[in-house]
Length: 91
Length: 519
Image (cartoon, rainbow over all chains, first blue to last red; front, top):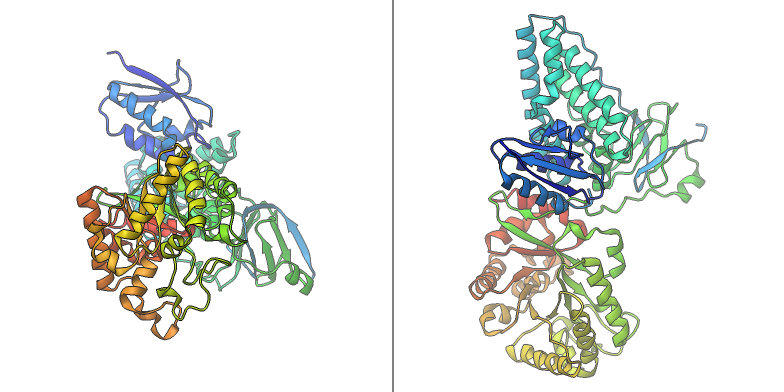
């Protein structure tokens, strides 16, 4: 089964930190099937539903977030959230 | 007491003078004997469940940014990946507490190697989580909320965010940490609560109860401050800044509420992140007129700065609301027997069309560069709105520009009662004046101030009527008086059909929390 893929740069000030990580994992949990993220196109890929693993990426501002998922809508949704700076303030 | 100074790093501004109170490090040492692996795994599950329940209660009580920080900790605890290494160790015969402590220590160490200070600071969150679950595993009751003497300066090696939330800070005080980080969640909480805090002070050799002066903004702790120190560094509560938490404000039922700022002094915006709000709902322009009548270029410059700060968010500028309690030299009428019922707001502007035209031109030119709206104060009859609209149209035509949207304050009861007769593009309820005119009571006369209550049913019915007209006619209705920034009134305003609230920046966090708690 092929996975849909996408990539989006992290432009919010502190990267994929606590609040964005919680938002990302909550969103990922709304989709069925594989939803994974990585900091490089070749991986390593981690489960986007695990806030522990998402935080462990320690993805800073400026990193490129790669997304792959069984459901193309999941890729679009996660990329959209990141492109909106996680609907977050500077925190 | 010998005077001594410890220098660390600033974590939250403000200064506190008080007695040092040492917060002992929690004794979280593993001490279980290993039971059968299945029993140990069950004990860990139960402890994690109990910790989640305790944190959820804390989040509910805290609200706002604090709730989000606790929500992060809950999300971590709920993720099976957090405990996975501990489960492996338990299966291999390790007691639950030792397995959990080792697993979280290893993950915290991972964060401590991060290049980014923000991620390094997350090690403290893991330490917080580790301690909470360990206390449940040890059968110990969670630490009772610490009672600090009012104004005390808490001294500890580090402080966890949940411990901060368990302490009653209403008496003020400060935080002096031997270790810690300005990027920690507890530092964010201290800044949000206006509690001065310094970190990285190193070991402080001080007796319990010794007087100390904490300068959070400088990151300095003075032990045994002398009279000169106290005079030089008087205790000063930190301004409570708008938390960085932004994003759409939603009620528990999912209703989107628009949050706007009231601005009087453009300079105050410098310290505020525009992402904290949805725009500016009320710019009071009286301050621009404080040093005489500003010319068109000076006003245009000010309006441009507002638009630049708002970064595309709407900005509503109220035309000069002189008169009443806001005299402007050379313009407002001195010596009126009752200035609140005199020539103020739009009444004064229409009486001085030359001055009014300068302000309208500056506003029209600024509106060509961004989403600026104009709002008229003290409108009483439709003819005033129409006269202003005619002036605005003429000035816009002369400038070959489009007139910006023109709205009105609803603060005169006559206007509120017949709001449908006013062809304004939007309405904003000035709850301060509306309340004092409806209740016939001035807030600044102590003997009757209690009567000037925005929650008076008569006031709320007028607000609901204006909101209903706005909803029926597709026009925005906001509240921009003090009632909008009072969390005790948020539910009443939302129930009256209000979906847009404009308030002082420091009111945002509490109102956000009140909105989130409302269905």
